[in-house]
Image 1: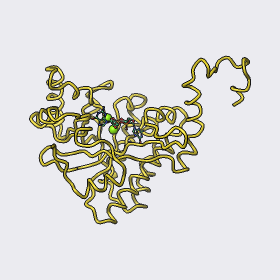
Image 2: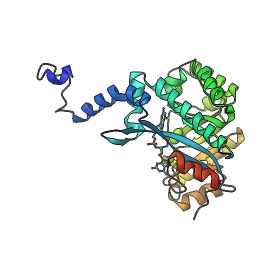
Image 3: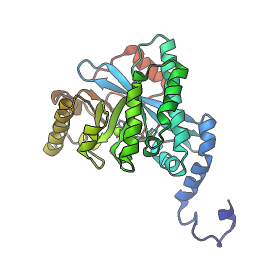
Image 4: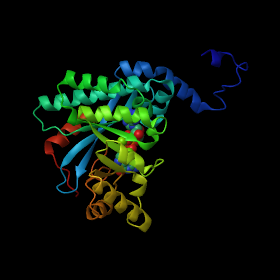
Length: 282
Ligand code: C2E
Ligand code: MG
Ligand code: MG
């Protein structure tokens, strides 16, 4: 505010020159309130097994229901939360909300499938994270195998030692670990050898043109072979069309996720999908 009122004096920050940063500043300042004030919501996108089209999991994707700006997507505020350190509180909120969702489904008598949360680099460097997650699970009476964490290779760069230690503890608790956006980061194959990874998620950039690009098709089938030889499951992200799904099924991919079968949906819609339990291509 002092920056805005001090017209002409503080020249390093000028909203007229960069109107977007005005909004960013506002969002960053309001985020703590959003976390405690019920402005964050989770949407859930199913992961579907290609053998039988069963829903075998959901990925939780956070959105910010801002009273003025409407629904804001994570790419617009997760980087702010990472920058300010609020990602720790936000991440805890996401895990708690996933546990609560699982507990609600369990209480309603639905057969549970794991929910995956996306975990940022900063969270992976927090060695108290596993204890807190264990506490959230215990408080909601949910078995650890129903919680999955999705990490990216980029989040391992800062300290592979600490991140590896945290991941080891999470795996020790019984959580599932997925490597997200595989192939798109600074891929280092020693990561998938040394870390307790249960599944690889092939980045959607390799899926979008899989029918026309022989290179992409070869990369995808190589990732599938690699993962299977290492006893990991493979999930293809960003499947938007039936022919991509068919290609992936033929190539031996285990699971798919994408707009073709379902967009991320509200908790209520996710519960209805879970009750139906399959999501076949039409
Ligand atoms: P991600 O983990 O790779 O999640 C997949 C993103 O792709 C989601 O975007 C999803 O809506 C979108 N998507 C799914 N299927 C398709 C498709 O068929 N086509 C296309 N074009 N897109 C598809 P969203 O929800 O905007 O999330 C973006 C990123 O934000 C996520 O990428 C993840 O890195 C991050 N994120 C989301 N929720 C959280 C969270 O709770 N915590 C943290 N730290 N990061 C999160
Ligand atoms: Mg993800
Ligand atoms: Mg992804």
